Image (cartoon, rainbow over the protein chains, first blue to last red):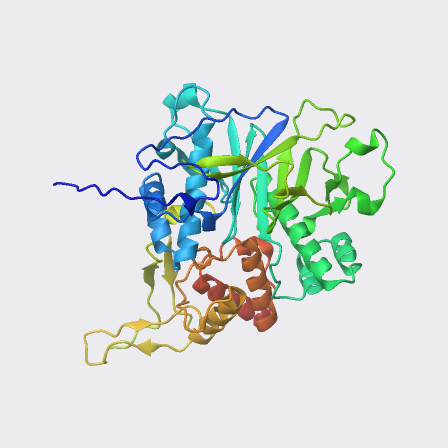
Length: 318
Length: 143
């Protein structure tokens, strides 16, 4: 059977990153694994990926099962996001090669008992197995993938202008903790209150995802996310390096869970993004060194742009 | 003079999408038994002149499924004529975790029930939600 190849010309202004795109060269630039004191957050804006040819090549990276799932989804935008989310995960992880090239198509995934996706390695892969932990989150307009070296990670994003169908305080009373309801109720500006709700939601989701559980396994009413600045606590120790966002278990004892670090960002100007990472076990409680988060915007096979310290990645208050 | 059987079980396989992408725990097959509770009415599919009578009933009333579809469409801002049926998977409709919880809360208010977060994991399709609602309504009525 003869397969006729068509040459497709891609207009240069299709990609905001202004990189050249060679249809035949599916090259993934390797990335160094973050140290134990760092995390990476990659994000992709689906609207910036317009090339039909590129999208077709992306489909070739997915497993048959993943392609089948994408085909089941109704609506072009949702289909595209589902495709791009899987492409982002595969290509990002493949770039952290520690021992030779990893074909993104070769990666295998499974879900843990609560549905969290994990990497699955064959027994004979032990040589080229980078100790990557990852977690993904997406909306219709943004896809984010967090990566660490060995530490459990959870990522959640929400559009900043997302409307809540239910009454926010009723929702919070039903699903959150009394402390969180009190904090939300104290905000008189309804728009600020809605935004605080979304930030709180992303932080809680990021936490349960980092733990490898979902809301079913760890109901949101069992733990409180707090802001040190809001609480105005006098903490012992070094002040500025104490975590701003903390999580407390509501188990009658109110125990502070100090082994989790949270970062809350305004991402790409359009979304709130919460990243929750397990702190390195070797660090003592008294010496808290926040893990550095590096934010990169990417289009797989096309290029990356560092966004740390720009308006696209602003650490926001809580 | 064949007497109709009071109930018959029909196993239905859910939609053809890959099960690997089910949100819940790693079940590898998903056969749902639909059994006929004796206190529900049912329609016969074949005339009584046949050798046997086949009777089918959905686990949840169509009105319940319809109401769930309405709430789902509203939450996900889908158009009235968009195709949402009992077989529709929340994830495939574009529902994220916040949407799902908002939908469950909407269902709680609509039907006057309480859905434990632990049950949320098992709600993958509109039909699952409708079945759970009717189960909770029945449980509430008998308590």
